[in-house]
Image (cartoon, rainbow, N blue to C red; front, side):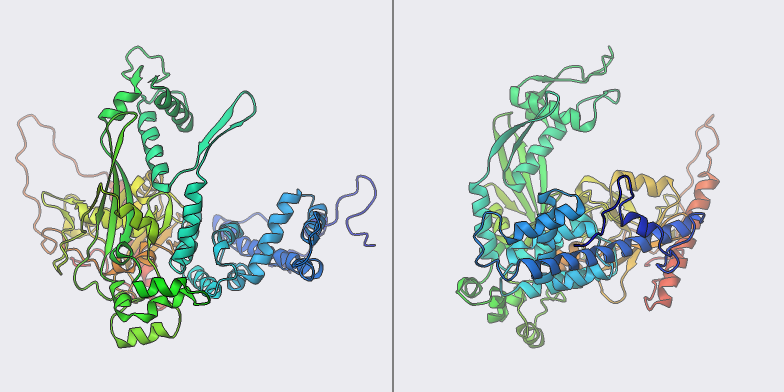
Length: 613
């Protein structure tokens, strides 16, 4: 019997002490915590990669236990406490965790070994965070044993190795896209089962509290959330409740048709009593944004559907049987808005609005180009069968789900553009600072979430930020309102960039026309790439949408001076500190671009040169 971990009473456990007494230099760890800021950040980045490697080793050991103790018996073991449970019990005992936690660890290890070996290598190499592994494992359960299992594993691994950063939402969307597009029949069946199993439940909690919940379709959940959030916002800034506490009270007020009010107790507060029904009846419409493309709206070709349903026929091969179906994948990018008019607290009329076309030149994205060469290349390996949609804040939904939304009688499909090669307007006619409705929609569909590394706030819930600060006095100097010049940010990260010393940048990718490179630089100079997965990866046709130049983009005519009114104080220029901050940011962006150029990424022209940039 092994004596590992067994010692005298009060003796320290083996493991923690062993790591603390190991040679830190041999492990590549700093020997001291007396480091500059850059040193601490370098150490954190290195430790993140090290944690991923250690997690890989842990799963390797767990998978080896499964091979030794479970694999030979799992197909015929009918015991109540079978070999799997006994193997997990060993892990639970050794790690002092619950049986449930140990079984999840064992599940992950087996899935990574058998279903996702290339993703497993990404964990080993530190290109995916251990916190994202459970998301990847759970979102790919549908592919187990399918003919396209290896393809999904390879696609996810290739995406994870792309330069850039990831968030939980983007990892989830990546996995869902790869699964939903390859086997629409299986996804449809699962969705039908999920809809049949929708439910309402209550659960008793501690301290006299309880939880109320319901399962429903994604778009219905989004609508419920928006209605509750809208009523919860009917308070003044002195309300003492948290945002989530107000939402809880608002939901109860909606259900009971009861008044809802601010709790500040100030006599001048105009939100002391708010009629929930009146707010619901008189509020503006609720918009749920859904992004998809025309091929998803039309659905797979009949040949593809037949092939996908044939026993033994790999569903992913279906698209290769019809070259016309392959070509149509590039026809456009659609943006669908599920619009809800609040008629009363009990009656809600639904309307779906979608934008659906791109300019004519958008007929050949890189993964679905027209022509014999493209078709031959696709025929060499299975292609995606069906499209997907993206619901803001909720992530990827299947093509069948999108078609169900589009088939609703209240749905109106509205095109993004007029279907010609005419560039779309970039700004509002009377204000070159503000983006046009088309550009606003495009940016949010392209970015999907706040673009700050790790943030999962939906783009439609945030702001559009001018990456280079807009010069209101001399717009021709840079920071103009263009597709490249704007990016989605949540309010916090927008304020952080505006008032902090963080520097962000984005510019066209010379190797991928239509796409952009993003960088974020902290005050100490460390630069991190932006998101690796965006709307471009979900809907490649976005690459081909073009916008016209802002008004007077090439002119340098200074603004006409205004005649001062008698007695008016002399106007002042922006604070020198602000000008210096903007100048420093321009210099920092140029340095970052030059640094990228040394790595083979050609930078665009400097920002202080006349447009076009």
